[in-house]
Length: 633
Image (cartoon, rainbow, N blue to C red; front, top):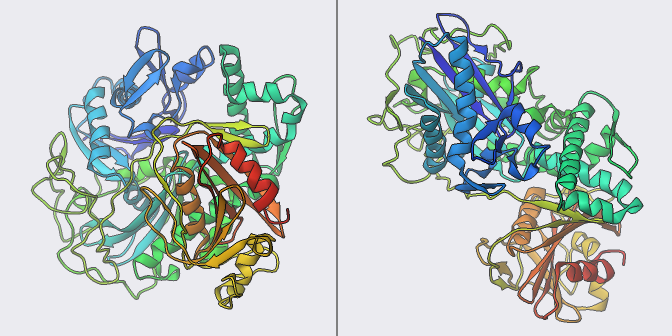
């Protein structure tokens, strides 16, 4: 039995092979356990992948796509002057893995290929992956396996009724899942994710920090790096991005390192404390989502068998520290979190991928017994099923795009079945997750920066902006004199509707403007959020709404959604004043302007709107905020 598991990640692809009764082992491609998931399109339209693609990207970066998985919803890629289907790009990556595996097997065919995928992926995205596998030349059975289920299988052995949490921080996205053990294997009890958080976003934050240190020396030269127009500029930008990523990885091992800079800029010394200060708000979002996902199962964190870290970006020391501080559980990670998913896919019993238990799953009151498996020497794929009452494996694949279609279960993949990914809706008890999840399609973002601000260029039609007030009722974790309990209990309001916490965000605006409690605001396509809101009318057709939400994540996600509502240029920068620090994003289109600003580690959101004007731009709105609205001005 020759079984190959492939974890096609955003930045790197890992393959694990089990053959001839031997334990699963990582397939080294080009001498490494991880192969970059990158693709490069030659002038004749042929695709080069992996490290060869990264090397050729130095010649013409416009023909290079480092993260094709992040483009799964786009359908097509423009690489140079060639239009390449996303399925072809993914197929090229898988084909290179298959070629190396076939070579190591001496030409012997595979009996089964297991493809891992995010638990959030619905049928459309999963079928893109499966189609890519067929294009790559896979002729044997294909078994899709959710990534958290694979990770859970690799990390621990659970008794029926026990569960663990998988915290997966990859290059492109963050995913969290609670995986429970049933009589037939594993099932996803609850899951969620952040499509705009990953290692690439950490790289961007560090790049912006470096830019603030050096851009004053040659602002025009820095702009050429961020928005390259010539091949030489694109090469310099590519080299700088690689050096920034290497510096980030070095800071996981060392307290400080240097980022080499192109001429005329001097090299920049960066410290781990600098990086942690930059990414702490984003990491807090992920930890809060982890805690919320655990609560969605009806369990407390101490009832889990553990919290396990997956994905290369989970190596960042701050991740484990914040989980321990916020969730009160010390997470577990192996030396190579990048390989955990691919290795674990081999341990998922065949009868654990598709069928589900007919009996309700109940939380075990017994203390969890966790057996951590080493990276090397895991249990062979031919080991007996986890349920000793069942003899022999059940057939998994009956066709190229189906997983046992005669059986209904949480991991059924059947192109004839539409709808969101079902998460064991028939199970009752604390593991029950009755709601269904519809996951949005996320398009990749192209990020650029001005001196002191980041400019994002995106293509698309502007949506209609309807001015009003967004709100929410949330938990506060504030810096300085503001504490979570203070703001949670802060129900007293002044005559204009401001609580003490909202006053801190508003600064002097309540004293100089007409403000009143309540109102309504929204942007087309964004669901309304209710909460404590105060609206103020300002000069020159500007207005500002101050919102107190219930979680830091809620404020940040609302700001993200607002900023993306206008598909035009975007200006982003940090702000500070009145004892607070945070970030703002401004955008404008069709005579309408919008700026959303948040405070670090606080569930506070501000929305500045410009209702009319022929010359409205993102820069105009940002200048108005800095000169008029920003606390402390």
